[in-house]
Amino acid sequence: MAIIYREIEERDNKALAALIRTVFEEFKIDKPGTVYTDPTTDHLSEVFKTAQSVYWVAEEDGEIIGGCGIYPTDGLPDGCVELVKLYTSAAARGKGIGKILMQKSIESAQHFGYNEVYLESFPDLTTAISMYKKTGFKNLSAPLGNSGHFACNVWMLLVL
Picture 1 (cartoon, rainbow, N blue to C red):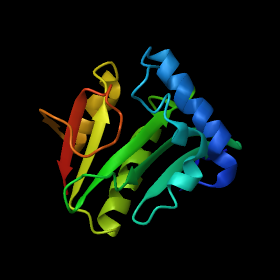
Picture 2: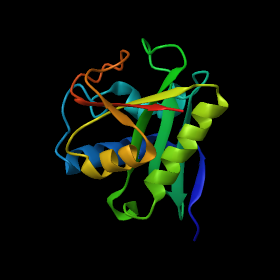
Picture 3: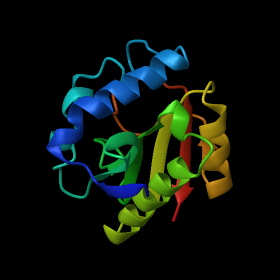
């Protein structure tokens, strides 16, 4: 069956929270100051009702296998949005699903009129960081905005 890409719905919350936390455990980055302990991880459909935000999910055979979105994080410069919560299940990796989710999010950022996309990550997530660099993201020396995810220590910016 084909993979369906669509915007988040309330029914996705539990599966997405479980997927995100599984990825964090897998990469041993399940610690405070990340989305792992962020209470909003359990109700993402509510979070993405915020204006100028969107969260895309990838679904295959009724199962959520990935997600990625953009969010106007507090404290970011005007015209800048954060690329957030890009995760795919272990079985979904290496198939271009994460890249499609990221591209849909970047296209949404352009649609909303943003001219920069910021992200935070971990050095352990080497495949994701490589994908970001190939997309045009550049490393920053310090974080932007107030995500609250103080444990992240890779910061990148894409100028659209």
